[in-house]
Image (tube, rainbow, N blue to C red; front, side, top):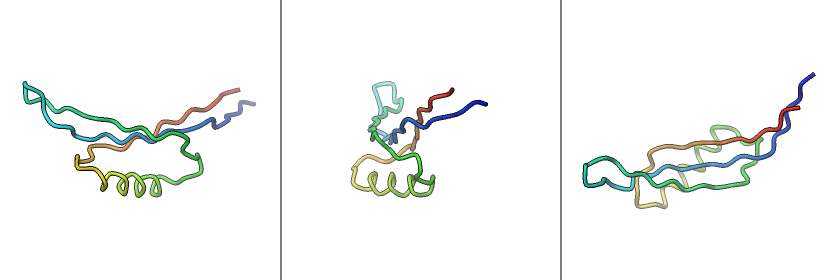
Length: 71
């Protein structure tokens, strides 16, 4: 029987940082490590929006990246 073991997660907030000389959007990503695996999606979105409200740049996306061990 296969087992999975949660090792960790990161929360990444993607901000619109302006445009380059070709008028293409530029992005800045801020990463927050050591996210607990038991947090719900709703809770993570609420926290991400609260953090983003402190920034002068508009929030473009929220990403959660998980690492698991398979055995």
